Amino acid sequence: MPAFLYRAVDARGKASKGVIEAASEAGARRALRERALLPTAIAPTREATTAASGLALFSRKRISPRALATATRQLSTLIGSSVRIEEALALVAGQAESAAVGTLLVNVRGAILEGRTFAQALGDHPAAFPEYYRASIAAGEQSGRLSDVLAHLADFVERRHRTQQKVQLALLYPALLASVALGMVVLLMLYVVPDIVRVFVSRGAELPLLTRLLIALSSGLQNYGLYLLLALLIGGFFWLRWLRVPDNRLRLHRALATRKPFRRLSRQMNAARFGGTLATLVQSAVPLVDALAAAAAVTPNHFIRAQALAVAQRVTEGSSLSRAMGEADAFPPMLVAIVASGENSGQLGEALGRAAAELERELDALVATIVALVEPAVLLLMGGVVLLMVLAILLPIIGLNDLVAG
Image (cartoon, rainbow, N blue to C red; front, side, top):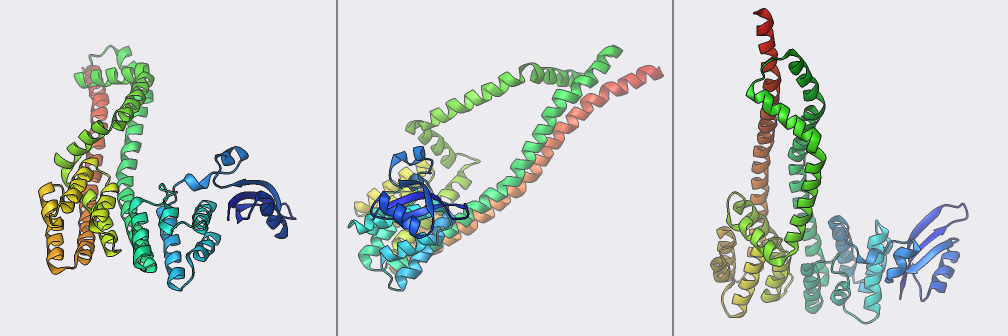
């Protein structure tokens, strides 16, 4: 049944908005009036004219990992309680925290009612449901373990979201500290140093080299600061355009994955993402080659992604997973060793799960170490800059005092 986005007001004039299912727009208006609501705007969720009518086109937008994990866990509970998938989607859509999630689930439910599978319906919204998510759902439908797959996916999405938040929060303080310190230095150069310079010039004192450099830098910022900012913006624009070329992006990612000092962090982050996704898919009974392709698709570094796809090709040709990963030379030895032990014991899914957990712990420790080093480094750097500015100002003052005393 089609879904419609609506805006309406009640008898007291209070505005509301949401999603409603109806056979037609007239049916949607009639259903709203039965709820004692006066519709002010109604439009189908799948039409591109939605934005023009004043309603957001939610079905093409991403949803947050937290909302995705919550909806996935609710679906797992309902389907595990023998609730039909279309009814479960309707219940979860009605309890969604935002209209975006509700609209998305209603559209998925409509596609299922038209005769499509759950995985096929999710394929209409690739921005909201990643490839590994859809592959797991397809495997769960084929194996009859959809509720177990959904529960596992909810855990995986929540775990990955927590990891991303840890990294972002860990780097927030050093970035904020550097931004504030840099802003203060620029303000000093623009508004404080010129006034002090005028005093030195009026006294006719001979200025030290450090002071002359500070004056030249301050004058340059005053005269050409806007041009410098414009040049940085233009440079950033062309840099982003350059990165859009696949070959250029691959060169950059290869450098990050193979050269110090970025090599270890880049490989650890990508291996954690790849290993966690692969563990989720293998434990969800997805065929290994398909699982490798899906896990490679969500690996951020394009160079390591290409290596992962090469591993999938080698496995298709008959090679073992551990041997193919070892030959790729893009994954930590620990991951390759655990994969080999899992293959030998016939418990690859559990081995990958242990490897993913260990990679996440190592990544957390590595990020904590980097942050612990970045914070004092930022303090020392900005403290050194401020010290040079103070010396550049104090040295002429000391010279003037000596001149007066003489």
